[in-house]
Image (cartoon, rainbow, N blue to C red; front, side, top):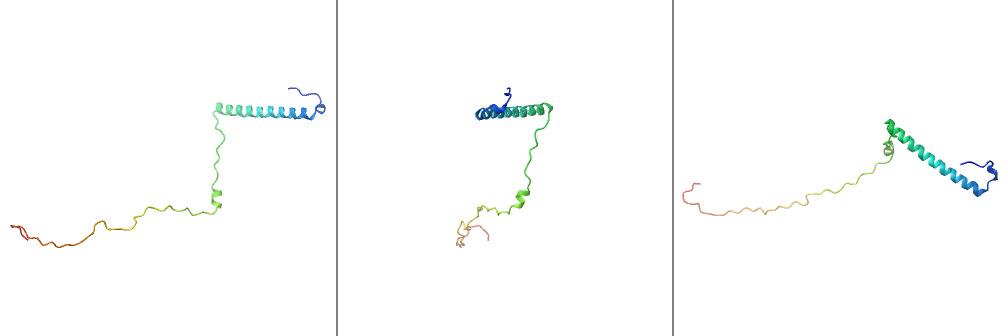
Length: 99
């Protein structure tokens, strides 16, 4: 694209159109440049940008909130399963047995 010799002679609409066209070309060039840099890094075997993890300092400055405990499953009331009762049964000993 060639620019006209004098930009002062262009109308406002023509200048806007030219600016939009130039911004589009700049965006295309930036995208192409980023793709080429990524390809060069891949071909060289370089690592990508580091992944930064947040530090734990932000958590330390916040007040600690108590964690609500879940209600555990308890035993409930203890009930005897069998009714315990003592009975004395009078029986006769079989013949030939010893006490």
